[in-house]
Length: 243
Image (cartoon, rainbow, N blue to C red; front, side, top):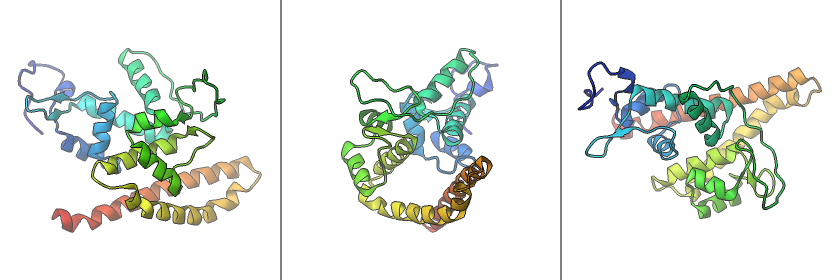
């Protein structure tokens, strides 16, 4: 960790002191959120969910409170599938001392009328998806052509589309193009086929408990597959990184 920021008052709450670089924050969060990247942290900052201080040279410095906020955001996305505007509202309510009950998104189709405004946790329009994820509209069109992003109902996109678009936008910042990502779609399709064989029999039962077990098993299988893929990539990059 770095030394206390110049000008920090003696006796100040150590949780509020800007000590950590963005790389140190990433290392702190990675064990719990292995898919987190520096681009993701920058995106959450751009969305106003965390506001690290800047050194005179322009480097970000995060406090432990900033890390706690990031952990809250990442948990809400992973465990409750909440869109960022709902997470932002919960953070603002927490900052003001309001008691906020946890929410899960309700994905509903809204009639295609000019005056129709979807609830904050509903499906989103194409323009909003582009604005919130930073993806290039042309790249979004390519993703749709490849079947990597689909509209849940004409003109509306769900939380998974937001996650995919944000991830692709982050990869694009490193120079990767949609055409480089075809393998991800193929790998996901293989997982779908394999996991469907495992959970399909339970999902087809009339017993609600069996269908609930199928949903839980699908979620766990998805999480395990993500962990496996991330670990394999990290292991494969060790020689490149000299670790």
